[in-house]
Length: 51
Image 1 (cartoon, rainbow, N blue to C red):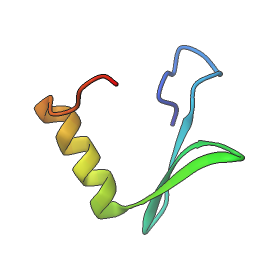
Image 2: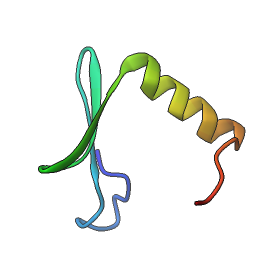
Image 3: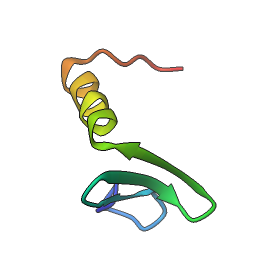
Image 4: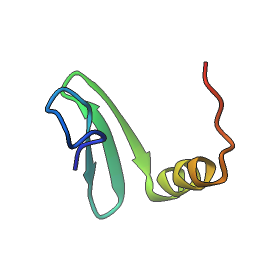
């Protein structure tokens, strides 16, 4: 899946059995399922702030 399905320039999100990878080759982060779920929860709660 893409973070921005309207274009092809945004990072992709690849979901595997044990991990989730966000980014593009050479610029990726790998999250464990619990880390991904914590990120989603923070987004849904509005807990994140702009940098």
